[in-house]
Image (cartoon, rainbow, N blue to C red; front, side, top):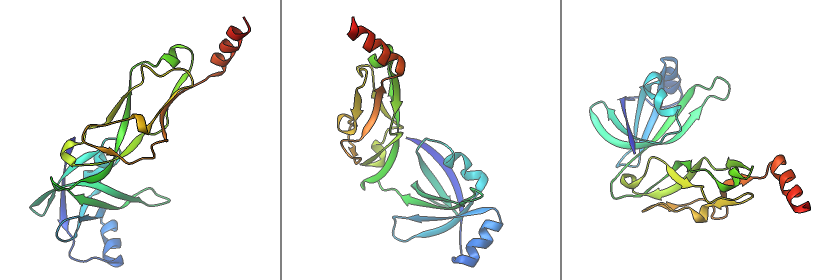
Length: 192
């Protein structure tokens, strides 16, 4: 997995008034939990921009006033109107404790159904997985070369080494949909 370096400053005061003052100062209030105790800190918007606006999942190397720890971004809150980042939750990582995260799905290969005139559709961009963070890949790669026209790949058919997929087993990850042109060609072939 990719890593991301982030510096933070411990918050001495917490609460509505202090949080509002932090946001006015162009900093984002954050919480690190999962360790012995929760740590409240702030970071700048410019430091977290590349962490938030990407489909990638990162292990974050946090440096909070000199105290270093590894974490992942667990929750993110945006303002409903202005889309400013309001709050971020980070989960502290331990090498022997499994965590649940969502990993991006990447399709590989040219599907047989696409060659026959269908359209490949990625239905689930991310899959929820559980495992040790040291064993997480950057993304889940699914080969769609064997996927025929009108066929789909469900979560039950996807497997990732050393990880447990938590999504519904019947949920469709990718499918080749019939297009109008493919339906017309199939009807013409059936008529002959």
